[in-house]
Length: 114
Length: 112
Image 1 (cartoon, helix red, strand yellow):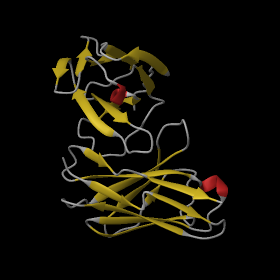
Image 2 (image 1 turned 135 degrees about the horizontal axis):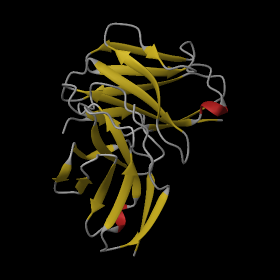
Image 3 (image 1 turned 60 degrees about the horizontal axis):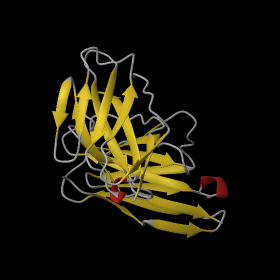
Image 4 (image 1 turned 45 degrees about the vertical axis):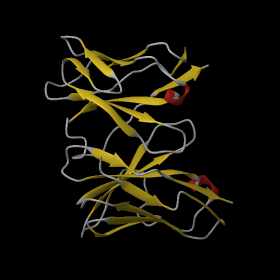
């Protein structure tokens, strides 16, 4: 199957700093990528839909100014958590599709804000 | 989107067959049933998808009764490495077309 890679796999940052997470489709082009967040022992919750060359669409309750999404190319979408706080500590997962038939997920990024 | 209900957790032993049932009473005519597996600190992985009757692949089987209001994921002869959370999703068969709505999932613990 197609490969979606996230970087970094884990990151620890200080409260108030910003962190960028990359999501790459390694062997296919993805017009749309999705960003999810997962807290411990909970399910995945959609944060936003990232469209190449246009603004992301955010789910209700997700602050677009805090979670900046950039989808500058067909193989790369980035999620920047700005002014991170401990409550932003979570597991962030992206998914992408080549031809809409099947979604492939990245391995996730564990963010810990101290 | 049709709501799904699964058991929160299940326990099994190595070598046993595990059946996880998902209820989706409000499934729409065009909806497919898709199951994902998620290991700790990893993204979900596609297991199997079906519309009706039975689907089998190298990993699992999916049984769907005629009324399609439920489905059962069957894992034959589980091993310790099958310990994971299993999610049942209902919706467009082309899972890459849309954002996916994950329910609470079923946490399967396989004991030696």
